[in-house]
Image (tube, rainbow, N blue to C red; front, side, top):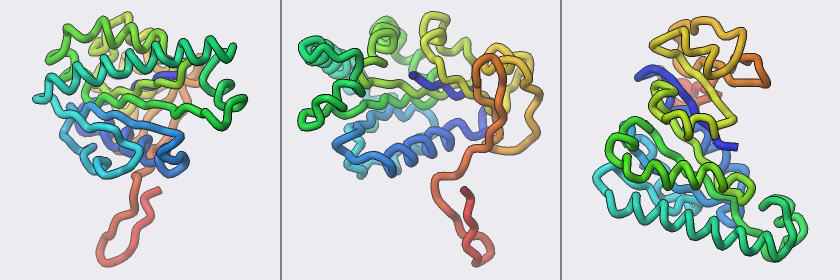
Length: 221
């Protein structure tokens, strides 16, 4: 499905996306996964620009590129509808199992800081909602970060079945995002809850790389 991670400023949303991307590109080849990034946060996702999996990293001032990317993904969606229909496949993954010689890559669209995207490109919201509504069966997935669920708008928010919450400014929003059982989170960067059925399951985000501290190698995973 599509994934949304929510959290107050400074509590690890961008790091979570970096970890997600790192995990995916280290477990799938460039032939299996294509990634497109709208880097509207602190521009900390540019570290992925040289990866063969990454088709584009776009910043807020590149308005034409944002528009072209959504049009391109819509074209890919329509092409895949035709291909899967001809092959009588229910979704991309069953198609790839039966047509291994003509397998199609999964596509991940990442939007960091969704509030900035919506403020700058509100005119593109209908196109994004339409893409998100139809694309999952065709291997096109969306992952976003935002401070609050309201940043996405009701129509888009309902399409994100994978919901995660880091430390929130308003603790009353945990239950609405991840279900029952979520309590306030201590001041631990990367600590959060993920929606698991109707319950909240606690998790700790791993850093995507190890770091050096006091001359010693520290494994942050």
